[in-house]
Each structure stands twice: as C-alpha cells, then as structure tokens.
Image 1 (cartoon, rainbow, N blue to C red):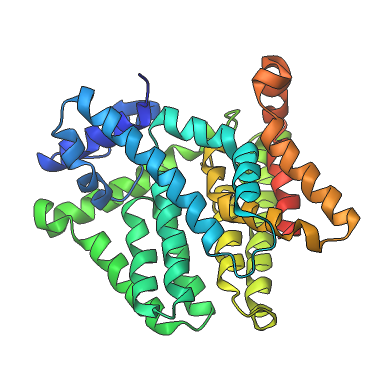
Image 2 (image 1 turned 45 degrees about the vertical axis):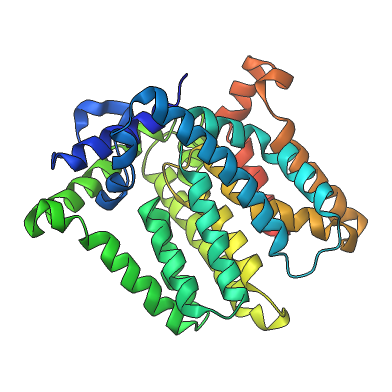
Amino acid sequence: NRMPDFEVYRTAGARAAAGQPLYRASDEHYQFKYFPASAFVFTPFAALPVSTAKPLWFALCVGLLVVLLALSVQQLPSRTVPASIIAIGTIVTLGKFYAHELELGQANLLFGVAAMAGVAQLHKGRGIGAGATFGSAALIKPYALLFLPYLVATKQFRAAAACAAVLAVVLAAPAIAYGLHGNLDLLVAWWNTVTSSTLPNLTNQDNVSIAAMYAKWLGPGSIAEWLAIATSVALLGTCAAVVLMRRRAAAPEYLEVALLLTAITLLSPQGWDYVLLLSTPAVVLLINTLPRLNRLLQSATIACLALIGLTIYDVMGRAAYARFMALSIITVVYGFVIALL
C-alpha cells in the first residue's frame, strides 16, 4: 500500500516516455536521482495501472531477494557452513533492511543481483560477460561506476572494456529520445539534483553514510566534511589493500565485490540504511567463515551481526532506536564489519 520509491520510478518512467524533464525540484524529497536511462527501465511499469504495477514489482523484488541470497551462497569459494544456516543467519541479520526495501519499493535488490551475477561470470572466466553485467547495473544505480576501476585494478582488462562500453551506452542511450543536447541537459540536471540534495539529508536519522556520521556528531561544516573525506579515502585504501593481497586466495573476486558492495552505502553521502542490504554477500561470507576464526574474532563477528539485526524499534523502543540511529552507531558497527572482512 506504500512503496513511495516505486512511485518515483513510475513517475520517471512516464516522463521518459513523454520526453519530459526527469529531474524536478518540485518533487522535493521524492526526486529521481538515477541516470536518465534508468527511467526507461520503468516505462513499462508506468504504462500499467498502479493496482497492477505495484503487486508486480513487489513480487519481482521478493523473487530477487531469493536470487540474491542464493547467488551469495552458491558463489562462496569454499562453503563450510550449511546453506540453510547461512540463509537463516543472513535473514536475521539483514531482515530489517529487506523489509524496508520491499516497503519502499526500492531497486537495490536488483542491483545486488546484478553484482553477484557479475561475480558468477568472473568465477566462470567469462570476462566480457562479467564486465557487461557489472556495467548494466548502472541502469539501476549509479554505484555501478565503481566496478570499472575495480576491474582495471584487478587487471581484468577485457571485463573492464566491456564494462566501459556498457556504461557508455547507458549514459548515451537517452539521446535517442531526447536528442544529444537534451541528454546532456539531463545528465547535468542529474548531477545538480544529487549534489543539491545531499546536504539536507546528511543529518537524517536513516542516513548511515560516513559523511552523515560526522555531520551528526559534529554538525554540518568543514571539519565534518574533511573527516568524512579522510575516512572515505581510508576505506577506499582498505579496498585497494585487499585487491593487492588477492594472490593469497584462489577466488578473490567474492571477497572483493562483497567488500565493495558493503562500502558503497558508507561512501555515498546519501547512503540510506536499507541500502545496507547490499552487504548480503559480506554477511554470508562472515557466517561461513565463523568456524575458521579464533574465539575473539568469532565473538566480534557475532556481536556485529547481532547489533545489525536486533537493533529494531520493535525490540529497542522508538526512543532508543532513534537515539541509536542519530548517533550513527550502525555506521561504526559496519566499520568493524569491514575490518572483519
């Protein structure tokens, strides 16, 4: 009955079909913030009655959740814990994010499935297919741009070339409907929308990004901004360090992409809490690795997963939950998750 973000997608799809401007300040909190090509993905849903489109998208997202969990378990390089235990543990840990995603009608599950499908292609040695799959994820979320430097850094150049080609198509394709100058105007409007709406959202309770964490602690300003930049650089450095150590593993792609998907929400200044569902592969990996860890690391892992999964207002109470989110404790917890990964 809600699914307000899906309504944003449908509205953008209808505007794209009519060749109208996609990015409007009058939409206020519910502005479309994705690449212009993303609107055309939802044009078919805009053509359907809302009473049909909503159940269809909801059912599709539930199916995508199953696929994301299945892919995350299947692609584990070496499974030591039964799949059923991993799935249950992951749902308990991330269930609140899955529920919020479905309630909003968001598209992060589709993005996560595309990312893990890319990992599956890498594991099969299909570089071009992997790159094209990673690139196509940009049709859902701009986060997919991060996959290109990752593929270059790991020297998977055929995959990187395919990814770059698909990204170029995603950015250029709306010119067919809007014309070259119209498409450029849309891209500029997209950038202006994303940047202009960032600052007002930093102190939102549900923003779990690094930038939001410092803004909540110190108030918006130059000090918080520079600390956010420094921490984000350190996080990217951590991802780079893992890539540099990839020779130690037979199939390092799973860990690398799981780490990148987890970092995405923290790096994006508009990283809403439910986007942390993209850490599904990371949680699957941690649960699977528990038997191999010493007791100290086992305790730390279980504590982190419990803090993520059990901190819901139905358990804590609304006041305590609001305080928990206002202090960005979930962001700190995910800092430990990154360290454990």
